[in-house]
Image 1: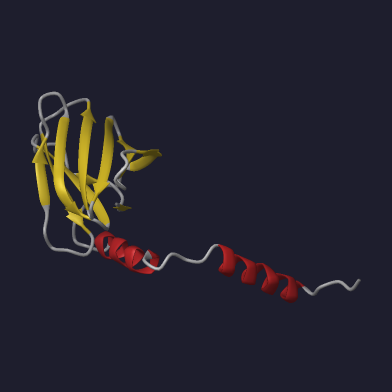
Image 2 (image 1 turned 180 degrees about the horizontal axis):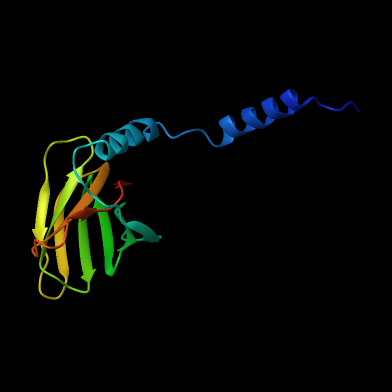
Length: 153
């Protein structure tokens, strides 16, 4: 049995990886959209993704998952539901505070917005599938706006 050279071994690993775990077709476009958002003139601080979980829902092909972001003392919990090519984001801000939430889709100029209720709840409906960021704009002008990292629905 002969030993493989380093390059030959790496070629085998690359071949197996490309065959069994290829790069998703939409990944390059999604990352380009996320980079375009990051390079925009918006002066935003990014929230940290703390948790992401997935659960199965319904029998008609709908799915949902939850994301949790933390920024300073603000905790943001999102439940994202996808059904028939459109999505809905239900969110909760803790501690609750008056603010406007704007959904900034990565590849489309349209925006969706919601105002946080006294209990900290908001909902964004009929969102397109794709890369999305949420911009949180506190009504207290002393607090700067901030945003989640881009995530894909």
